[in-house]
Image (cartoon, rainbow, N blue to C red; front, side, top):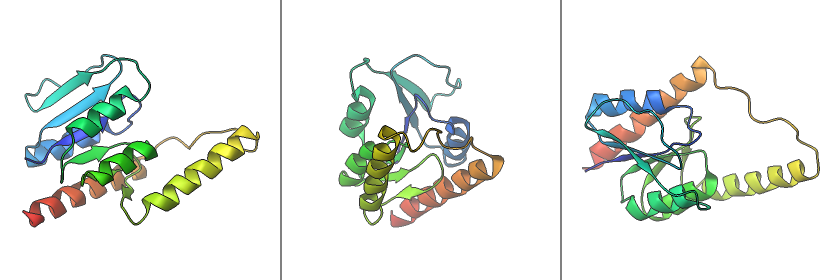
Length: 150
């Protein structure tokens, strides 16, 4: 059965994910290093993992199956999940795919170098309503594509 996993510690689109999951009656598992509030819904659960480096990522990769969906902004996690056949949607709504993950990793590495050299001192801009709408549309499209595949 199709399942949605959320890399939840810093995910800004949890509420939007719940909306799509409810529409399709899909189970959602939030994976985090700390406790957090989740809706009182039998299909939504929280998995709290230890504070070890990449513990949440490792847990998600161990659980995810082909055609599940992972919500994350973590590029290395996205790459690992793609290798298992999962669909991955970034918190901006941009799907990670086999075709774009290489360029995405290269861009991430370049930006890390620039930050290390002091060239970039700000983070990404805050999410707008338009960003949230784009995310909702993207996640909905991914769910529909998986369901069409059978």
